[in-house]
Amino acid sequence: MSTPDHVGSTPNLEVVDRFFQRLMELRPVEATYHGLHQHDHRLPDGTLAGARELQELLQEFERELAGCSNGLDLDLARYFVGLTRFRLEDMHLSARMPEAPDQIGTGIFLLFARDFAPLELRLEAITSRLEAVPAYLAASRQQLNEPVKLWCEVAAVSARELPALYSTVVTAARDLPLASRLERAAAGASEATEDFARWLETEVMPGAADDWALGEERFARLLELRELPDTADAILVLGRSYLAEIRAEREELLSSCWPARSLEQVNTLIRAQRPESFDAALAEYRDVIARSRDFVARRGLVTLPSGEALRVEATPGFLRPVIPFAAYEPPARFDRLQLGIYIVTPQDGDLGEHNNAAILNTSVHEGYPGHHLQFACANQHPSVARLLSADCAHELVEGWAHYCEQLMYEQGFTTSPEVRFVQLNDLVWRACRIIIDVELSSGRMSFDQAVDLLVSEAAMARPAAVAEVRRYTFTPGYQLSYLYGKHLLLQLRQRRQRTEGSAFELGRFHDTLLYAGALPAATWDTLF
Image 1 (cartoon, one colour):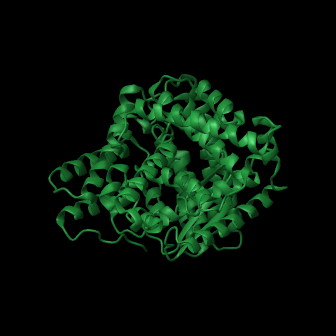
Image 2 (image 1 turned 30 degrees about the vertical axis):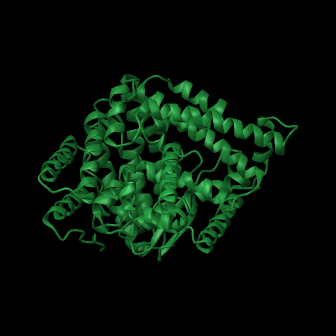
Image 3 (image 1 turned 135 degrees about the horizontal axis):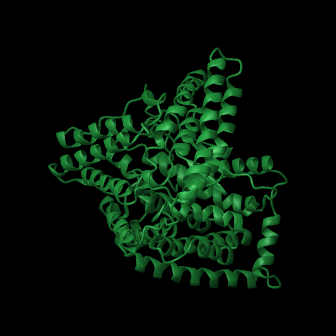
């Protein structure tokens, strides 16, 4: 059984340790995510009492922190508490959005996909979680007292996909002694899950609210709690400025490399340059991951930590409604093997999104030197407070991965005009994300207007754009972190280059940033 490193030699930091241990008891799926496996057999307490217990724990922790001295780790703990309380008390997410399908799916997927223990032991934990599903789903109905229709639709779709995940687990255990127990547990969980989806569709959604926007005042408060250096309106201006610049660069690329073709024609041409099947696409993703890892190591762009690995898999069905293209599951902080999982979503009858240039650029973003390397480096730091802050420091997590697309282009790994076209399209998409995030979260833009913007500006297929905007509605402030975070990282790099002059080393700059943990932008300058 893994346990966290003791980060504190002082009573102040022991406060953080105690809080973290209790938080993991209340959030057993999150404990599994971090590699604390003593809670692998459990699901959360879905009742209102469970929600109140979490809120009371956060309030008590905040009071204890008020009596502690200052210091980076303690400040990060305060940062985490402020943002977590905002999500619970101001956004009311647990009361407005059914979290149970995602908790169940993630709790089972992590145990099934990560090789931290023999399969039979992991299947035993999965069986216990499946046995807990009916009671958990029944209890979780208590918390949903301010349901939002759109979010209930998303949860219902995810719930409908869960029985397929249960069946996959049952198949894997067919020849093991616990097979019959697991099969019964999966059957009971499937029935309860389908009943939960029907309940959402027939009883909750007809009377659910249509209003999901955070509103201008609360969105401004969210950015203030994140300690970002710019206001929402300033970030919006930046997004619009980037959009205009990127459009111009894309037009220049089109005129020089494809002078007789329109934007739509070039997009169609590049989308047609793709693997013949989804299996072939997965093989290409794996090849690019291997090549990019070798490139980063040879160029000394980041020091690779020992014991890390990255696996590419198809996106599980329960996640496909909210992950239209690809995503990444980081390695568990306390697992010995730092295994990341890179998931890729099949497209219905169309592999255009998985074209050759997109596979290369997305893999740089998700793998090396992007998300996977950033998390594998951050996990080397023993601080629990920094582990908590990683859940809030989106400008580093997403900004770094987006920055890596430009970095690998600068360094010569991605040089073809097709890849640059895809990068510029993705930059347009990220600029649109800034605009949509600010306007949608503030309540100044409708859902359909956001979809139209992605379709018209980012050349995104409408079904994919709809799936994107669904996620945007319940993750305010997250979408802007990609391009805005990259913007802040480039500013930091320029400051270090000016300060250090000829002594500046790109690899050392990256190592200093990544091995300090996933920290909010307000702390970056203090690392150097």
